[in-house]
Length: 401
Image 1 (cartoon, rainbow, N blue to C red):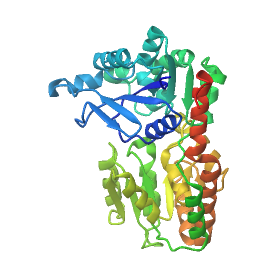
Image 2: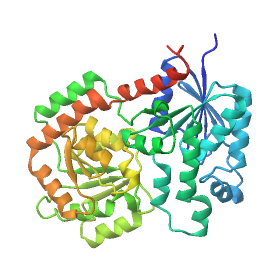
Image 3: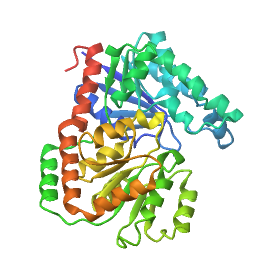
């Protein structure tokens, strides 16, 4: 009997994409055959066989057409290059399941799933209409290609037609059910970190033994206005005289970077704020490991009330107490697991106060960090999340081992 074949479609380059890579590994471990159609902005090979998966990539368009090709991709994914690439591979591979990552690709997945009578798994990494709201300024370009109202209409249609829907947090469930999605077809597959129980115990033992740490603070992620990094820099700068040895590491990049560097310079903190750019995963983990606090300063908006970033669980798995803003999903985890401090968004004094408390009290840092390790090991590890992913597939294909 041939193995069940899953055809995934993802807009971004692959690898790296942690969530997709982990899903691929989990599905492969249960006997499924995996193929993926991915974007290709780097000029990677059009076909590459990686562990557990065959990666098919779009050919890069001629340089004069690249901007046009990008414009056609949001939010309704009218780009004919993607449509024909997906059709060609579906006809060649004859997959049993189309697994589509995020809303812009959903119309392609639903159309071909209905046309060829395949199962459709819609994997919503985030609240996409809310994401568009954070950048929407009402220009003609945004009205045509990044319109949150039109994206919301598309989402309403897609969640009704998908066979299975994967979301990152339970905070997504009420809004999707209100759109008409069948609650029995929605599965919460979080962004938990892989954490071996022996490694978790080793980290706990080292942490509770009082292993020395620095006074560094770490942020990992994109640099966008909605991420609250301007408030983070102001809050950190206010501590400069009290903690002259503390540094702030900002790992990532994005459109807000020039403004953030200018702000750090204007506050006289540029010599203690380190912009590392994007780092390989190993180096990123090293930065977190060397720090004593991890930060998630996201704005108070619908987008961040209905998602949780990978970095939260990375901080927790490495035993770092978290300073997070007061969004529904962050509050549920950080306050609920007592693994950090929650502050109101926009209150730089409160954020500075949270840093001051943690930088001054090593015992508190260790206690909160230990709670984070335990929470990931017991509730928020990828091992737990992957079990729900397999359960979603078994609902459609009971023979999966």
